[in-house]
Image (cartoon, rainbow, N blue to C red; front, side):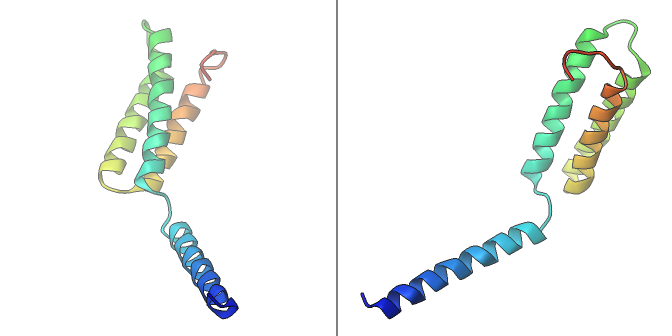
Length: 102
């Protein structure tokens, strides 16, 4: 294999990788990223519900409603919205303050 062929091959590989990277960045968040965010929020909510069984604070109820909306956004393939709602769920749970799980 000549030097020219090696350079052509290297250039082709670099070009393909650059295009794949650009498409990945330009496409925005994926379903996988949204699902991970929702699962983390779901775990935090579970821990809060376990810690506050009776009476349930308003923040826990609000977080549960927000997480339900996040699941609906995920079902409708609105991944950015699902990620933001999952983060909002975690923020609502942080308002409880002083918990070991956060």
